[in-house]
Length: 262
Image 1 (cartoon, rainbow, N blue to C red):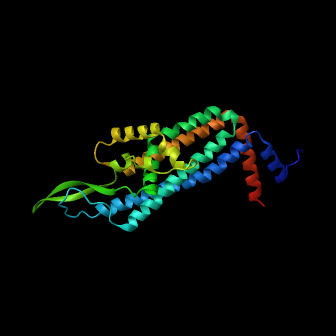
Image 2 (cartoon, rainbow, N blue to C red; image 1 turned 180 degrees about the vertical axis):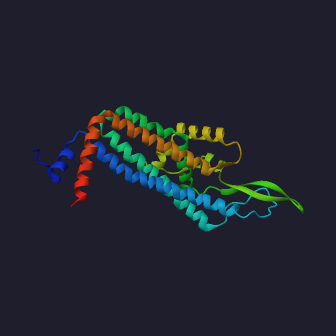
Image 3 (spheres, one colour; image 1 turned 180 degrees about the horizontal axis):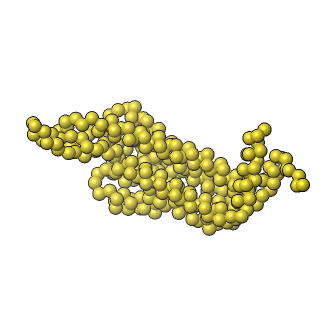
């Protein structure tokens, strides 16, 4: 009869397995990924709540647009949630970047991962973050779609939908050229490079013809793009040694299962 291994023996096997570092890395990645997803939900909920508050009650409205956000609390919370989202995005990037740099067998996967650095959606997120940190809060406003409803008293104009916008010119401005950047500041990597600035400007000019950018749309697209990119990198990493990864995963599950019975 085969002797049953102790928990310590299983842990030793796990730590000596061929994919221990990779599996351990992906386990830690899940924690950072959870914060990334949670920060996205908080930011999106804040924007949705403001739009809902603006348009939930169908009031008579005479003007074609609403003025810039006047509520300090809403603006402060927007800054907080946006900073949290941008910060965890950068943390997740660095988490993968450092791991991929330490493994010579991941050279091709590292090149694949680095493609995200010139993604216009990513550059946009950090352009807004850069504006807030080093300059001022870019003008944020609600634009409202309207509809006219026939009543006994004639046609009445109602709110139909609010859209959370950010000033297009504020993002396209080159004020950061004159800002002092230290060599290790993340901002220099994001926007100081002329090629990245060109990509960002081309994207905004192509996608947004008016004076404002649909901020919620960009955030949702960035979240989807970045999440898909990370998922794709994970699959490539696992594929390098599929058999070894599965063996390591099974060992980890055995350890967790055994510990749960103690």
